[in-house]
Length: 283
Image 1 (cartoon, rainbow, N blue to C red):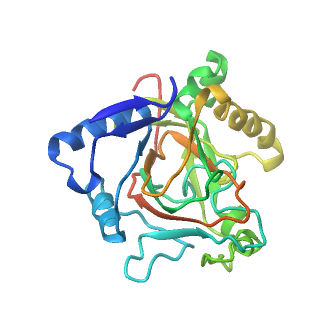
Image 2 (image 1 turned 120 degrees about the vertical axis):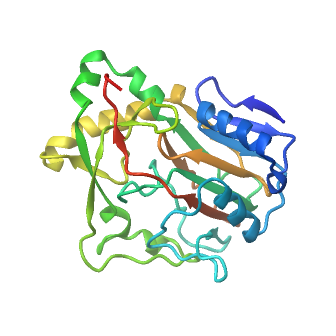
């Protein structure tokens, strides 16, 4: 196994490994690399939905996936498909976000496997939320420690959400009523590394606890822009047989929508996570 960092901040490609034949020693190496790089890219993998589920089970088992329809025989494997003939340029996953932070127990990690990709475009960007926290001033860190934010699916899957209207070849269900909200710490402690992450995102973080959206927007806009500062990011270019796994407890990601006229098919799973814990200086 050989691990090559993508940037000095986030991401690495892992060479010389078949994910269908992991042994305990290789899994331990991968977990160490995952904790260090947050995003791992594996090329030239040959996976069926059953293989992807076996890998997902190996890394903690599937998380709950509302709103999205999985494959008939593998409901936890969600096909992310955009056909060449689709009218909307918008891709599923476009826009910076962390997966499903509107849940009480958001996913620990996401696995995404490329089945069919355009000749160019359709890349995914990733941002390091540890690095964003470290970039804050000491005064801002102190202000955010102990603060909670309200997370909701309303913008993507609420009664008035239009995401599903842009996805012609995916089955997406909207809530009929206003979706539930979850309160999560703004500065989250990673349960594996113990490190603090600036844990907000522009898709699901609506406002700060006990504040209005108007009062919250200016600071949220600043924090989300800081997270995706280019020095905190990496970019993954897909090709068929690529699998990328990333840590939802410390990253944001964003799919690009720059491949109109070409087909793209991915298979997505998530692993079960825990209730996010707040970071404190006494941790």
